[in-house]
Amino acid sequence: MILCRVIDRIVSSTKDRRLDGAKLLLVVEVDPDGTERAEQHVVADTIGAGQGDTVLVAIGSAARLTEATRTQPIDALVIGIVDRVELAP
Image 1: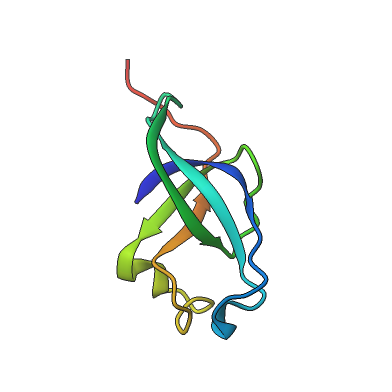
Image 2: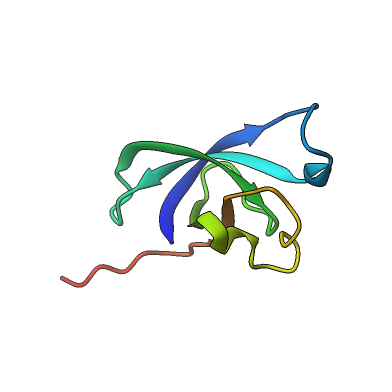
């Protein structure tokens, strides 16, 4: 899993039919303290994340292991919205 922050929504009117109705987001990887990294990803979202949310993202075949994504051609999926990150002192 990768810790990321949602930058914005991606709109694609022409895409594989299996992605019809799928919500796509642009996310940037972040460190546990919230510092943005250089890596960005386009991810599918089935749980309702929004701009500014910190999220957990599954990359690769794990993104297709949910009931909602089993037949979709995706390799990145929001699998959780993070309430907080607790770092040990």
